[in-house]
Length: 560
Ligand code: N01
Image 1 (tube, helix red, strand yellow):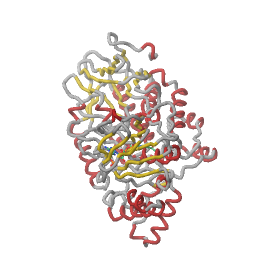
Image 2 (cartoon, rainbow, N blue to C red):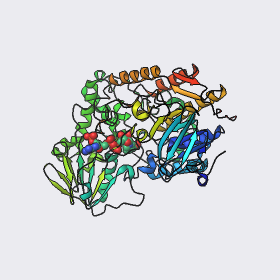
Image 3 (tube, rainbow, N blue to C red):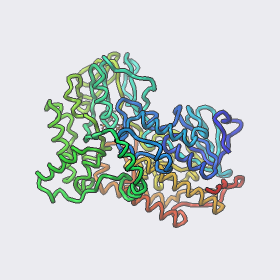
Image 4 (tube, protein in one colour):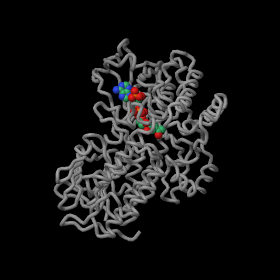
């Protein structure tokens, strides 16, 4: 059974399905596909007006993927793989959104989703064994299982500068970019933020704007993407060997292939040899691994890290003609390269050689307020016609905590995470039965290829739902001890590295008041994947499985 959008029900008559899904980005779409394959009914809700998630919302100038497009593709359907061709090594947002739409059309996925609808609450009744979702459009839907496919970077963060309402010009957040075209031609534009987003947007906006003022709080390390068109031969070659590539991805740290692991230590090479090696990698460019995976130990050893970071700082000084601007663009020496999410760019540092671009260090002279004319810092007022916030997201936890998630015995996500996010494998939170998270905190998620993560998590959850049905069970919950052990393990793994050193969204420090915890699992995808297999083979060790609730039968799983 599946109901169309028009049949969506009202408060008085909740819609009952087997599985509820929140979000119709790349995760939500794959979940719907899998549920349908199993003959399970589903209802998905999505705040946007269509599919695509990240690529639906982030329409800012310059937005593009920074994992090779061929690897940033679904793997579940050979037919889909054969039918789709990417035009560039790192495709731009419009093409990624077309891909999402193509997939939704091909598998008729929109049929089970309601768009323009934000889920506001999720409540679990332990008696009936049902989750009930409510939305801002008055929908009520129930199911024994609920999967949160809400995205890791989907709650935009805009710093609450005073005076924003006084500003007479237009302002935009990159994460909620308008659908209609925005022209900056002839305008004085200001952009706040130099993370992955700012670094992509700045060179493109600079080409268009009359003058662009970049407000930088912390300089970032970025390395050349060397984006280029994809030839049909290249795509064909990849498709023909896709199975081998996928197998390889499962044996890597970040679920990506084609970037060899380092084999040497910095002490194996002379400074000149290191420089030659770095120069070659800089010329080749590509994913951040091109520079980060040059020498062993870059993530754990500050001496090695500094050698790589110093090369990037030297490059900045070589590229940027004004020495003062170059110094401002050099990341601080106590911030290891790779500890903030490493971006890749097209002509980022070169952009600061343009006459129409200026750089303001807002760590030195902080923004005090917005004014009618623009932005007032500690030492100047900048007159602007438009302001872009590239100030990031309340990552990994923001979109989950935005939903009031609770159970009939008084557990709630807010309470469970009051001292930082706890999750078993990033898949389930103790105290919240039958509720799954895709790429939750504690999964490798954002430290790996997100599409592979989405497929992995979804397949694992589907196997678990099958297992429950096959064993006449209907409830699963993460065990508190197993969860605590996992959280502790994830903390130890991260703390043995340089990763938690920098202030970043990985540790939540970009959000005032958020507890500082390194949220992703940094033990690598291969290790994580193998552990998930082992846990399942061991009858879902660390999860409490039961037959519960008096009124509900388990969902029946049709033959695949
Ligand atoms: O956000 P960010 P993002 N006052 O948090 C600054 C993914 N992504 O949207 O460094 C002044 O990284 C902040 O300064 P600081 C990717 O995973 C992927 O750029 O905190 N400034 C920083 O410069 C990425 O990591 C792709 O000192 C403030 C910037 O705003 C993630 O999304 C492309 C401020 C925010 O950087 C987020 O990237 C783009 C304040 N109060 C993004 N608050 C691709 O796949 C924040 N800032 C290609």
